[in-house]
Length: 554
Image (cartoon, rainbow, N blue to C red; front, side, top):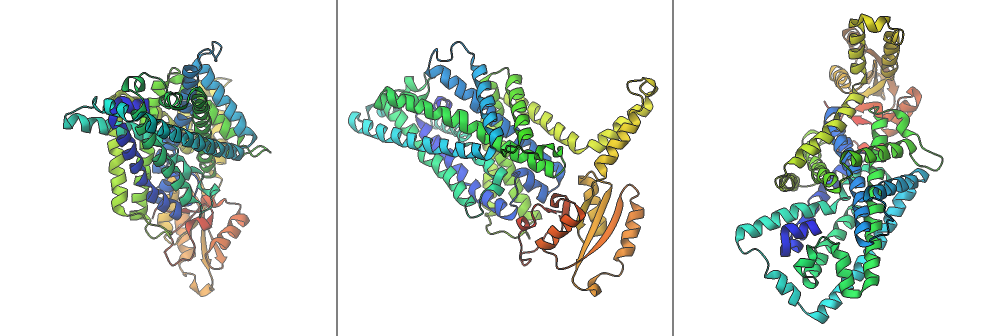
């Protein structure tokens, strides 16, 4: 809130209100996306189903960076907050050490049970709502007792020219929008939410910030002078002590520690873990990330999350301002990609069954709003764009490299063949055989395609998957329905693509989720490695009923 107050001044309540109203634009967008493509992974899964793996990895990199930045900023903010509120309580420990301790502590919680961590985060939310309710009631009572003199005095300090007022509201809104984070991570674990509860979950997030943010800031300006607001202290704790004394200030500080330090880190951890598991199912990252402890914790995902969060925080010089600047671009970028995903869904996958549709005008308006928010955060300090791009490019390059392991192996093989020294040196002698075996191991896992356009299917798989075998599946109810030329065409394709083995299997039965499940079990091919055409509205099943089967970009 302090940064919003510094930018917007007395217009801060209006800026916070506008920021919350912008969030309403994404409610129908996320509802439509979640209804049509009910898969963990958020924009990665949406872009994967509506575009292809290359574009999907851009979304994965954005969610990846957003999750880690959210956790790092939350831990660093909680540490700075604790240091500022309780001078000396850290016993000489640096803020960075406390932030790292918070990350480690909550990673341990996640290792024991990540779902338990989600419950803990929900508990933090309940405590937060109760604390804020107490603060609002106490502030309203204090305002009734002392009158509106402070509000009038603060109002007199406002800018008077129309351009200055507009500038203050615009930049204040862009900064205020960063305070509604958390909303964008919900689709990363949508499979863990009941379909009927998903709209309610979105509503709770939106109406909570709408109910709290702007009214609290209005009470701040009604009861605290501008000098105190801009002093650098925590605004809400100052307000709490002013209206009810030290006890409420301590309660607000503890609450903010739980919500910022606890809830923010857990939220990022859950989102990151869900994303890594989705990527592992799609063979982008190693299947190691699918393993869990007996307690239910996805230990490799959590440990990797902790490692990356620490690296991100350390690379920023343990500087809260630096890491916050990365988040200032990451969060709006993620929401921007949600609007892009919705546009692709409407234009490329409009036949996918869904229970809800967002209006095209709302999606376009949300896209424009996020472009404006990004501009408002970048223009005052352009260097944050370069900082964001540096982190984003590194993350994206790692994901693209993992996806292109076979191509990288071929490059390594070529380099090895060109260097006679490596072939003779005892430490690298025989590496060519190891590289070949590794490539064969990566490509031996087949993919299945339930599709009719054979050539397009093979080309799509070649562009998006690391495999040397494609199994074409054709479901039929009557043998007379099988195209007579299909087997001959498959043999021609098998010869036309010498690097890929193309097999054809006929499956008796009507194409539906049960048949796909049976074929997946029989062939030992996960459903995330199966492809099909876009079903129509009359198909009778939704995409989520197929448990991760992907729609081919045909």
